[in-house]
Picture 1 (cartoon, rainbow over the protein chains, first blue to last red):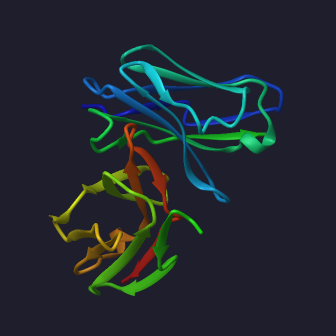
Picture 2 (picture 1 turned 120 degrees about the vertical axis):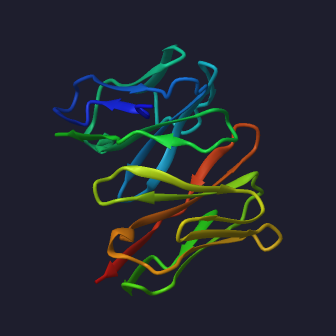
Length: 113
Length: 109
């Protein structure tokens, strides 16, 4: 089992650019979580999908952020346009269900200049 | 006041010591998670529990639902246990996790 796979591992881009983060779930998992980690705020849930359907997006900061699950094993988190305050580590996690242990990817370290 | 409070925020121990990290929460939960984050940044789920006690190797996690409190214990600590330990609680239909701020543990040889 390869675990949750995130790409890229690091991203540095200028403000105003579009950023796309990618996540491949563990095979058979049907719950997908996007988190953001910063020094100031720690870990925060951005959005949660179950069976490809967004269930809770209350953590998405604003309209610049969007997330999709085009199929059961893959998700994207897009920021457009990006701003320096979006700089953080973004984690994706998947689980067998909403009440099961979550398996985290290695994260994407995003720096917006 | 944060919904999930951890203590201590920082902990330095000598190799071999018994370590306890505490987590208190103020919301209703369906489960509590203990996570470990190493300096490289990766996050590993250590435990998910809703009652009683769980043990995995040198790690023990306990939870008291009535008191809304959980502890993570590490026996015979080792420098490789050095990491940030994060408590998170999940509840409601979506099991949305609310995270504590973490405890930075350094185990010195």
